[in-house]
Image 1: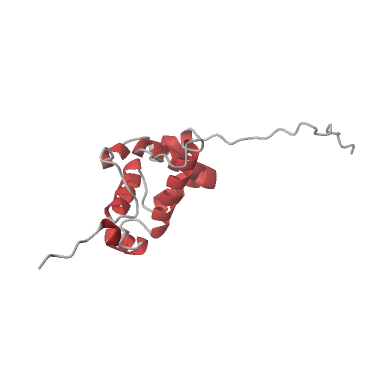
Image 2: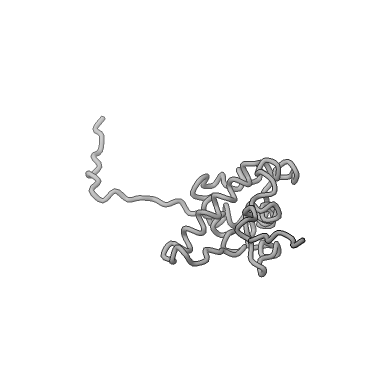
Length: 153
């Protein structure tokens, strides 16, 4: 008796092996908000880097690029409080971003290339310098500002 033919299209699509909450519970180091922030940061970074790219082309970003995008997003969201917010989620170095990414990769919530390693996230930048020392507050100048008048007492 011949064995049945199994076609690839008959196979169920590969999907996450665990939900995000199950990954959070299994890893036990970072809260769900940390994982959600990394996912948002990935979307932010892909959009920023590949904005002008063909939609069908690869939209891969490396660890260093992702860390830079996460830094920018955190500063945009929280300003000088960014490092404090991240530390409340147990994120105190770029390696923590890598651990979160690779936990999601391990459970098929994210994908990686063969060249991607967790070492791509090692010491990308110093958190104190990246989130505090180099932070600039944008100021806007009013062009049509009326002249200031002095008060008379």
